[in-house]
Length: 491
Image (cartoon, rainbow, N blue to C red; front, side, top):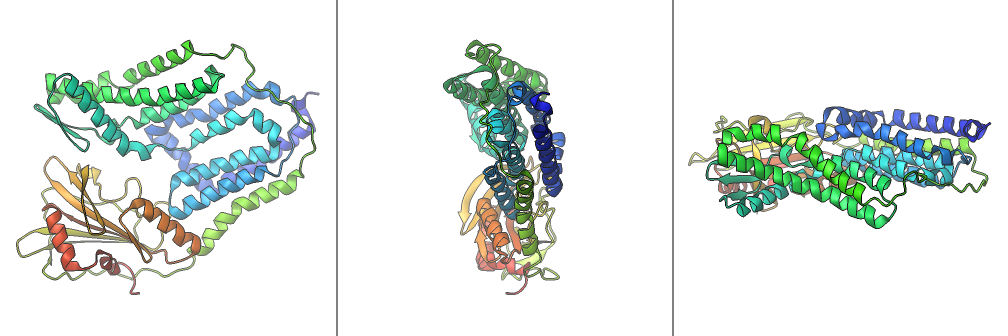
């Protein structure tokens, strides 16, 4: 009888399967959300390959692992507790990334707790590689857009093409180009980091070379995307802007990036220092007795249930919204019919109340006030997040850059082919007021964890007449935060 068929392995594998199924059932919403992102978001299609890769990595290590016996290990519950805490913080703050990470870490902790430190050491890389199951990286889109635009500008200067940059927009004598989100290169960078981590572990034994290869796997796709943007603009400048998009999609699609991948992997292969046929892992089995496995499994499930129960209790408490939102009365400004050069509709798909009012002053300047109120924030009902807020891509609007703040309100400029618009934003969560989306998340986190007032409202003041119109409107309205009282109950 081999170690793989011993009762100890069968019992541990059964308990691990029960733990994994219990965690996936308890957090099925997050598991389903991750799977939906893998399948539907092209940025994360590569995640569909991660589970088969992990299975292959485990198979590589199986000859060494089956030489030892698994044993339950209480310290593994610390990893489970860490994952539960990450999930709690993510759920409380409305950050899907933290929830997804928490679920993956809890599953990793279940392996450590139920199979023990010896097996966990042998499976260390597959366990860590499972972190690539978490859809992450879209947070870097704005930074990559700006970096790609700057790289393209530098290259245009090298070839003598005059150009002007404003945010992510580049203007040349023959055209106007936008480094849009789809052109940021984030898809390729994220996939390349996952591939680079796998290649670094398989090709190199020394950490210095692994780190160097990972740096190459990050830098090369960013530079390659800058080259892609430059080449598209150069082609448009040389042969006409109307042909640039087709050139970009045909010549600089995945064929170009496949060539970049081949170059990076070829460099790694040339400098590989790992002996062919080297064992994937070595295991020194101490054969020490383990902790009682079933009590450990019960404790693990209890740890996972605790944050869910904590937030469920808090969600049942707290004040509610008013039955209706009235348009605030602003001295010197009168409600009028909306009339804009280009349609603009901010997106708050999960809001419990939304009110939009257009005001005009005596000179004819128009300002749009948007109030979006939430009883409490949760998945799909978030004050800030991807696809939520002032950016209206459906009507062709693009972010152009920041403008000077107006008091406590952050101001952004958005443009279409036919119009430009300034938008001042402010958020209120309970009694806390901020213009910083990160502080919105922290305030939401505190409110949900402490069971305090979770009502929240987004305040957008926007005008095609520029920031001066917004400034004058706010001066007449008084404190911007006071506008939120039109959406929340009286205090």
